[in-house]
Length: 442
Image 1 (tube, rainbow, N blue to C red):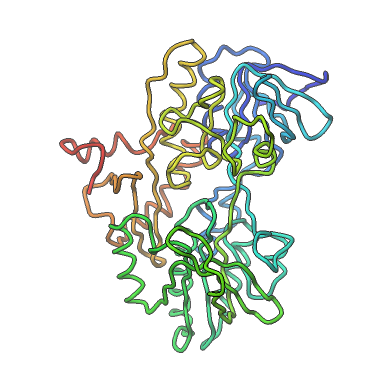
Image 2: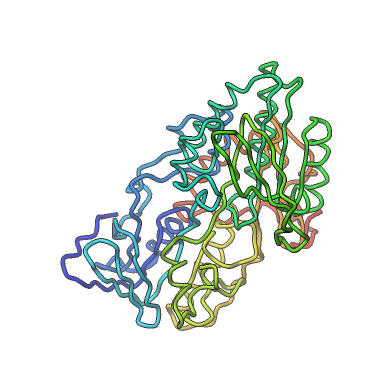
């Protein structure tokens, strides 16, 4: 890796990757090992100096990992031969193969582009939290594991929770990254409350905008057993819309089966601890692009429009997307990125060589659902149902699944996934299930 030394107002690259998170680093690393080592072949546009292992934030909030274990310097993850443009995109001009950057009014052009911008946390969509993450950090009793300082505050709130108080955990009526995280921290907090002797007489409440605790029935049924056994109160079709910080009141909208607000049916809860599952949206640059009249790059929300199987833009054949920013129907997790990489890499190479695209993403995602500090339900699935890897029922909370979550997955992320080597567990699945269809593994 080297810092970009762009001196002119314009620079051309064979491939530009917008975003240096999981998907951006992974595809840049994999492609860089194949393209000839020429100057200005590949660039990653990423303004942040730090790279966070986001799947570990739940563990941090439960005292199971340290902040230092979740952070790497971005420059250590960008491969040799790739220019790091430490900047952000101001605007996209896909018809002209052009990007305008935030600082310096510079423009970059490209032959091919991969958009990997992830999602933006939008606490500001909740009335009473106008300054987003800053509001979350400043409000007494409010916390969220979706960013490092928020996870640290979550642990502090859990440790100071007292007997007879109310702890509320919310899941938003918006897109969300790692949709299992809001209930994971609910189970972990409840486990810690029991250990501290403050569970008796207290209410632990999980409010989700969905009609069930989890979108895949097999895992939803298993989680309902956990909820009943632990005395957790579950409320479905409720969306956190407002917090009154001074009164510690959370107001939830009641939703119908289509996710639309039912007027006049708001529900209020008093809280001592309120954990907010972060509302999310595409980044502002893509949202702004979605407002343009001639927009064929994104959908109305700002998600990059791609074929859900090939990950290629249907309009701009030299543009692809990976990860949370794409309008694919899969659950948005780091595990999904690994399987998307298995599709994106050969398809991008085929496009560069003028060939047809032959690889297809099956919608795979995974969510290791921590039900306490020792056990995990290892959910693996596609939009069609469970797609499990191991030769045991992964819907049962198991110690071995926790050990994989805590000790195997972090090095797998740092050493393999972001370096473009880990393409998901398909080969392991075939090893453990040699005679089972790859479509579903019940």
